[in-house]
Image (tube, rainbow, N blue to C red; front, side):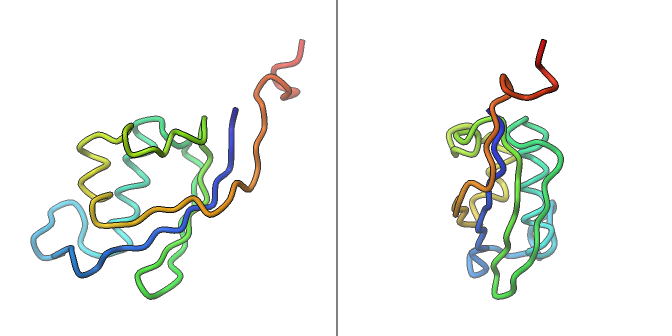
Length: 107
C-alpha cells in the first residue's frame, strides 16, 4: 500500500556542530541528507518535497511503500548520521492507495 505522509521535522540545532560535520553544512542539507538516505534505502519513494518553515522546522511530504517504512528500526548508519540531530513526526496521512486497486495493475 502506498501512502503520502506529511512529516514535521525539527532540527535539534543545539546538538549539531556544522563546522565538524562532513556530510552537511547547514540545516537544509541535514534534512536533505536524511531524506536522500531514506530514498536510497527504499524507505521513501523519490518524489518527496521538503519546505523550511523557519525556526529549525521543516515540513516534508513523502510517498512511502508502507507507513511503517519510516520506523527508526529500519534506519541504517547513513540514515542515522542525520536522524540523530532531528525529531521527525508523522502529522497525518495525506493519501493512501492500495496497489491492488490501482488501474495500472488491473487485469
